[in-house]
Length: 505
Image 1 (spheres, rainbow, N blue to C red):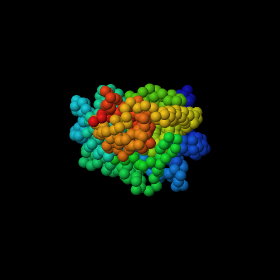
Image 2 (image 1 turned 90 degrees about the horizontal axis):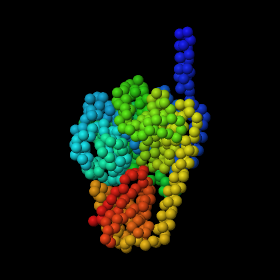
Image 3 (image 1 turned 45 degrees about the vertical axis):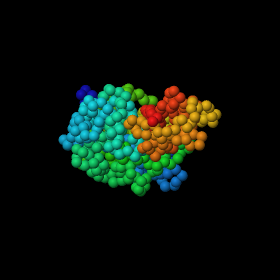
């Protein structure tokens, strides 16, 4: 009876183990058609995909072209900016220094970064290195990024301005994605090692893993070989745009890499810090980054079961179909990317794309995950595209409607000349509004970007930013006693969800 019980117990496990090593038919037989179809449907010039399973690369391939209208094909060594997937590198570096006793995650941030401040002095004294890495400072998601994104501000300037932002929530009460906090954590890693963030991430991660093409700083991609061009949507047209300049906040999103290099990173992560037989990162550091610190929500997903979503250190954590998913995404000027790990399955998925206007980078990972977990094929790309197309049509219709209002030349509350002048926001700085023909033009102190402001009637203007990723937004002015008091500047949610009031001088 015992023997029968053991057979009944172990045979399913053995069969499961055998099935786990098999490459699903979706990956073997359908993936190429799936991706190539998506390139056309989503208007993506190029994609790189890699799947790592049980310590081996199952597939690694580039699809499409590096640049819109070009013929130079994407391959496994083509560089893409990975945006916020940089954060897992930063968190892993800090956790490694913690394991080496060079700093502690529970150290106060000011111990290693004296210039770090928040508006509340008590909070400033309480913020730990861990707080920086799990987005629990009380800020709203992306709060302040309007000021930091693609500006001429130095890193020190950013921290001076960050210190004057008013958090939306109380300290540690709510999760809010904060890029400046990750920048601070990266600088702390550099200071604790008597080095810099970029030198540490190169020497402790890139070099031991043989990530020879991976670049730490955004300025490095300009002169790099075999690189993808950045693209975005301008209305309903895909256009090329310049690379994002992110080095003033580098530890939050400046890395560029290829699927070939990223496969080594993912292989190491799935083997608890080992790569080619060597312990590159302490296993305790890997586990530290996957410990829950912040609560996001209930983790509901479109299909199958998901019951929670949390944040570790540089990683989103969720349960899906009974498995722990460790993942992150990255979005920066002209690129969106995803990195997904299922540690129990020793499965890693990397998707890199060279337009920031798609959800395919996420859809593909779900279909690959479902294939390996034995769930039905859902065609997430088609489902996601349906939602996105509907949203895009609504947004384009809204903008067209507002442009129709502009064309009506509706009465403005005051003569256009009265809206011109210097406006100021603390902590951003100044914005100059000038009269240019029949419209206004906004020039920002720290941005190359400008805004064309066309009257919608009354106190409202339609602002079309010269950089399309900032969007086309309705800007209201506040008027008191026949004079313009302020303008409330808004940008696309891709950059910042918060409005910023600029007071007329």
